[in-house]
Image (cartoon, rainbow, N blue to C red; front, side, top):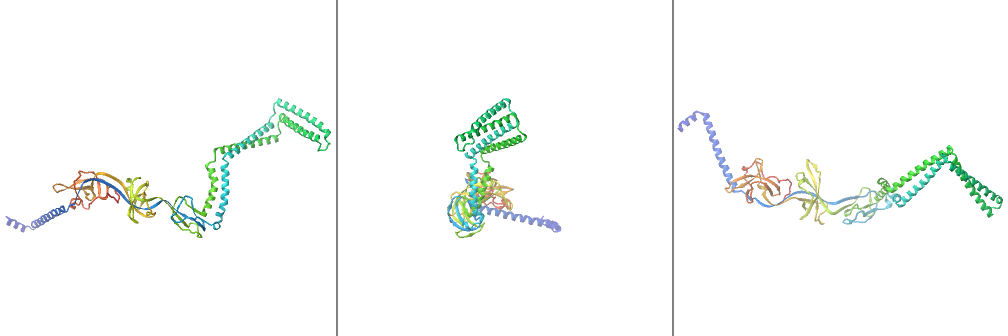
Length: 488
């Protein structure tokens, strides 16, 4: 039978070629299968195993930043001159508004020298302004109102006299008073007549002369009163009375408004205007010296007595070292896991032998975009600083964002990707590798929390499954939740 088949193959070249190709393919597949089987056996012999276990997990976010003081200021000279005194040195603790250095008066520009007298004048005016709203100012305003009221009543009475005729009874009374005053004047004139030629030092003459003057005044008053009652005034008199009445009304209104203003106290606008001149003089005068804007430590100092300085020249650096802060940038992926109050650890290249505790004290609400990446500023405060930590040092900051206790943990090395899903390979009792889907929660550098998966404590997990069992190019997953610098 084989001889007949061989003869047919020899007669049919196409059939012979196809048969040869089929034999070669079968041989290749047999060799490959044998090789893969040998590879699987070899890989399984080198499997690294870890167990699913309960444990504690601490997830962190790492970043770097620069140490800064709670407050920091560079203090510059604001005018040119010769340094007269320097009262502090580097490392000195100073209080707010403490004077650090000053310039010689004779070396200052003219406007700064004149500011001293201008300040005194402005302060006097400000004191007068405040007094005008005090007890004395209220008393003066009340007096002005009373005087204006009296003047208004007099003007109203005069205007009434000029424009109206009084009732007949008043006219008759005024006429009677005028007759009586005339009779009295006549009698005094008769009494005085015998003594008119007497010497001026004659006592009787002097007494009668005084009575005569009084009688004439009384008579003239009764005449004016009778005339005002009996006849209206002239056009000129009425016009004058009307003008005086209008003036009295305006003055009374002004006095009343001023009194109400004093009672209400000065407005913010009036106060600001009154204080502006003082502030301007003080600002000009302050160019002659440098004061500390806040309490702190002088961390750098440049001037010495006798130096010639110019406007804009740096004099001191002042830092409030009562709190040391580190600003770090956290990715938008991680920022929602950072909250005020979270603990942190800090380390410094300059202090390799020691770590420092810290705490998140502020988290920015708006991010900054740089080269396409969005980061948020997080401020961390050092809780136990010492003299070794200085502003400007670079700090490696690790923020603890999650702390879990007694949760199922899987090594990150064991996680692979199969068909687009995260899996781990379970080593069965039969020695087979079984892929199980897994959902991870918080992660550290080495471990991740198991949220979902058919796992039990103690299950054997393969850390290095053969590459033929999972997607090409897949490997351990990135840390769940993002962020670098995780630790257990």
